[in-house]
Length: 584
Image (tube, rainbow, N blue to C red):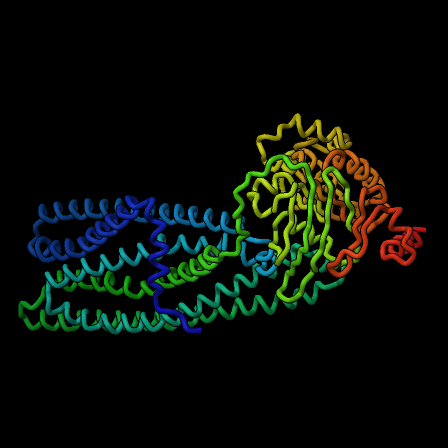
């Protein structure tokens, strides 16, 4: 991989985030300048002390210069404090702004984006990559500005004191700059690989921890440990490469610095011993400090550039996401009124992958207030219907209408506000039951929640939990059983008072007692509203107003339970008979 030495366009884009904090930005630069001046004054004052007062035994002058050096030191400390504090403060404010923008951008992505991009990579971008951007300011840009200022001020002092001696130092500087440049480029490429391996590791760990039950059920522990060992080793190799470059660079930089210092001391010392007035002991004494102040920033600029490169690489990855335009186009201008609930699919076609249609020109009508069940084998396209009705995905062709209006004409927020979905795989946040029901919607009061819970028969089970409605269900609701989680999902949907309710296989994979509770809850929450029920177990939907049978993306049958059973060799009848035989 060949990396750019420096991406000016990307850097300018990052700097735009300093605009709301421009006075602090300028303040940091001012303190960087003052820090450089006060730091360079110390060696100069020492030179004046040695040549002017120690050499002449002027005790009063010596005392005054010691006091002056103390004042300079205090000012240097003061400048250092505000420089570091404001630089880090600015970096964190910028991180806050970018992270907020990134997360808001992620929230607007289509579901298709999340199908393709690993969660671990998004977590890396939103957390560790953005933290690296902060280091552009706290450890990179401003430190480089401070170091460059210090070098300029030091050179001014050195030329003022002895311009001939200073040329020895100036001649050596391009050599160190050249070496720094070579290693800076190599380390940029190495750090890019480090960031890639970190993202891969995050994705791997996040996925395996989330699916730990499957890993252990299928005895995959050793295999996954070996897979992780391989990923971990790639991460180690990437870091070792950066360590190798650092290990080579710094000794070379030290050698160049030491040789330069030696030449200055030897040349200046011989001139003093020869008795000419080329230089003084004070000059040599201060030059040993000046050379350190000049060369240390030069060699450390490689480190600062490393921080800059890490931040720039991270920023590039973050901006790649921000620049990704994979949103559902919210082109609707109509604020949806309270729906009556009639739904119509007209010749709807859809594919998750181009050229592989999963919905193949279906036509489906659901009357307002009707309960419609959709059944079929796995992969028939049942759950896709839900995704399309909520506009999580865009259809290839055809139209979907609610109350006679194309759903694309409604604003997304007003459309989704009136459609509630209960999924088989219920997702609960690491929060209280109450907050999982209301999702922090202030319009839903505790009284409303309790009243709704009583109506669908889940109040008693909640009251038997520690802390009742304030019970913390932990991550993904692990403190509750599968049936209890689904009951909470039912309550969450019911309390929002939707016009249209969708139950996606909501009665599978639960115990008999919970299923009975869910059946009673289903009767309550579907009453008086359009409901679509998707289930594998046909016994749960025999009372539906209409049953739609899907197979391979097509509607192959529809009618009531009794009507479909009358079809001698019908798909539904065969499916029902096979389930009835298994049940017996």
